Image (cartoon, rainbow, N blue to C red; front, top):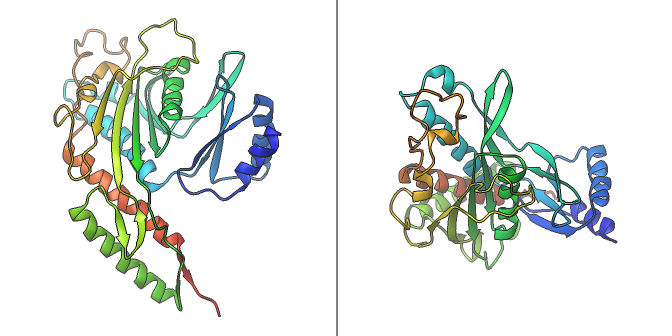
Amino acid sequence: MAHSELLATVRRPLFPDTHIEVPATRSEYERVQEILDEEYAKFLTLQYDGFRKVAIVEAAPSPLHGDMVGQLLWRISRSVDRMPEIDQNIKDGISISNDRRNTRDTGDTSTTRNWDGALTYLTRDGGTLMVAVEVGLSQTYDSLRAAISFSVCALGCRVGIAMSINEGDRNIAPTIRYYDTREEKLAGIREIEHNLDSQLQTNPFGPLRIGEETWFGKITKVVLKTYRLEDESSPPETLLDPKQSFFIDDCRKWLFVGGEVPTNLADITIGDFIPTQILTGNNIEATSVNFFQQDWFENTFRFALLATAMERVRDKSKVQHV
């Protein structure tokens, strides 16, 4: 029974960033969600794609996932704030929100999804969703595409930005490291962090290894895609094709296909963040928002990659009780 399969899935231990899709009806999803609500489950989210008829189980995000969402939103907001041609009272309307649940009718039922992050423009009359961001770590293209398409087509955001990060196999997964005292454990963790940080200086995409054990697999590809609604009459369950794509696919160095600033990101304008009626008379709606810089992206990515590896180290470091 799908209900039992779904319940068994949410009850088993899940690694950070785990994304599992289980065939289920809307009523089965709602029954399991009620169970999670009663148990105050904090470390996973349960969503439902009414068009594809699947329940979506997602574990808590890793630092790499969470940091890239936060940094993309912060960087965009900060870049707009630095533009002198925009009045400060207009800039103040931009609001950041993370991990909010949204339900809309799709097909013959409804879909419930949590976006990773979004920028909304707030006025006295309410909020207008402008930009949605989704980040997937080793998540399938179809599931990431469905998530960002929902924000654009069902929720009506102006532009969707999706980042897909592929981590290669870790080959030999780390085993638990036992220490005699808490002090020895902390010293061991610090030594591993120093070692992994040194490796990142020469191998910014990994892998990060100690001996034969791999704490983070080699990054094989990073893809950024932007999505826009071309036809206003498109139904909310429409799966969009990306407007443009940007690849970093040389894991020995940062290889930006198409130049340092991806074309699809350079084409993001002030009008994507501030509604047209707010900008009336300013003649700046088509002005590009240059939020993407290579140094910022590299530094953010490396820091988050190390933080994710160190979370795995801490999970595998234990004090041995005699």
